[in-house]
Length: 247
Length: 237
Image 1 (tube, each protein chain N blue to C red):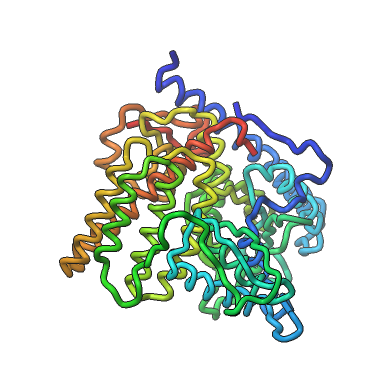
Image 2: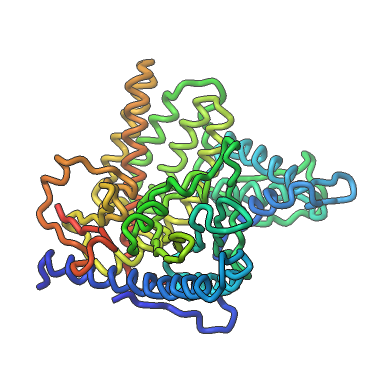
């Protein structure tokens, strides 16, 4: 039988569905692109402009090696548009922000510092074919034991490949997709038993691109994409099957 | 330990019970349409059916766990005001249902000729309720849906009342009833397209070939009593 779950509070059904801040920003920018969103007395940004600048800032962060799961210290004076841009961009790439104390304006305007012990990643860099950095990412993915860290490596690899393609549209879509997926990963188990398969699939993509074999690269990417998609559908089926999920 | 066949039988009962509940309420509204037409001397005008707006809004709200919209398509030439008339409402996240505009201008590129759509022709020709789809309702709501249709016979012709089932909600009913990850089980529409499945590789809307179906281990009519009305099958591989 279908189990029905009913809201316990009156008008609970009217509440907005669970969303992350970036989704709210995207929806607002879509509905009210010309409405005023930010104004620090010097620059005024509409919601459409804010989202555009957040995306651009997010791309810069990723090119600096910051990605999903990172913690980023923000040392930007309050009361400036850039502070909010930076915070939103950090969330946009799936990272978390940590306010850093700032007694006076820093020498360089605004700074975002990745908080980690390992040296910053150099990223793929513009106009480079996947090469050493990407293979290093694959190796780190293979050697990392922590499940969440592995997922971050998986996401970073996808974004890095997009950046290497030098398509701003693809990179923007990849960033958005990985940020959205990152919220899903907290609630579902990993690709149990298939981690090495994912690493092998990543390797096949990089090898094909290195060999300048476009057809093989497309096949490898499609194969990998299909595997990931099937994994997500499996999770959807598993969650939908749970009786308490009944509408 | 429940066998696969028993799981399919249990799922079939849940599905047919859920759908028949919707059919039953839609048939009541169709009965009201027939009665309203009979109560008027001569040819009833559209104003005689204004009560439908509230009836259908209540119907959509009552069955919001399965349906997203409902409406009526009048028999061609049955209304004095217009040769064709279609009234459809779609549920909104908040407030009452919204009227869905269809382009009924025959000269328009986007002309929605409902008289040629299967959801209109099937109940009109058979005179009975039927579940149509899954299909993409281009020019209508443009998504993959199933339409439950019920005819309303009047002296002026056969009107058709219908409601749209979302495949996402139906998938939920199917999966929660089935409770099986293995083997692969599909809910198949009469057009050979998959309504829902428990397998990531068999997507909703997939058109199965005869050779795929020949590999079926078990096949079961969802509605034993009335497969014409609900012509779906549960198939395991």
